[in-house]
Length: 112
Length: 114
Image 1 (cartoon, helix red, strand yellow):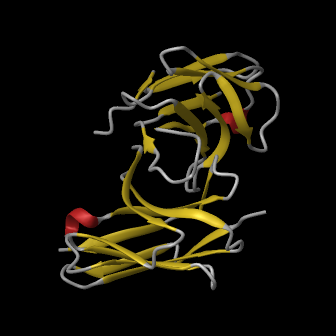
Image 2 (cartoon, helix red, strand yellow):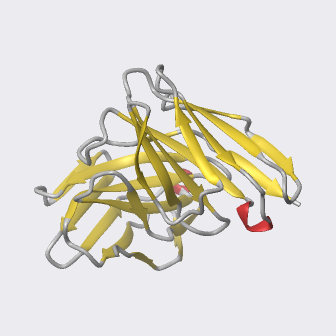
């Protein structure tokens, strides 16, 4: 059974600092890994999707890496801004291809 | 905005009642997945529908059931509501049942069971 863990559960940084969010998963047989952002009480916004054959994906200030063999992904957010304050969730799709398994999320606060 | 819509946005029910939640998928998508997100936790997979057929189910009891219609919109039905069913219910649509495409989430329906 796939298990996804995100550490830390919460993070507070001053504006301008780089953010590093970690995600680990127990079963390396995945199709892809996605990072999502969730604002309080809202739905999920997809940030990046990394296919299992890829090592990283970049979008603007966001960069996500994937090391499938060690079961790890890291989301980097450069030069954080107060608007980056949200909960960040990672999720994997296994080879059955029909469901996302989520971590518990990392709640980020960027202080002005 | 993802183009995925859900209704209602909020709902209050009492124990033992039944509830129906609705989801309209993004244009061109034929797969809808439903997730339950308890407060402070990550979403948990309930089930997925692909072209009107159930295509996988998570660890939820049979009182959680669903439908997908020919226009690919979907319903989640929950019978005999329990207090622990209080959660944010999210639907996600994608182009296919495979794992290679991004799933796009709606804003969710927040259900409170008293």
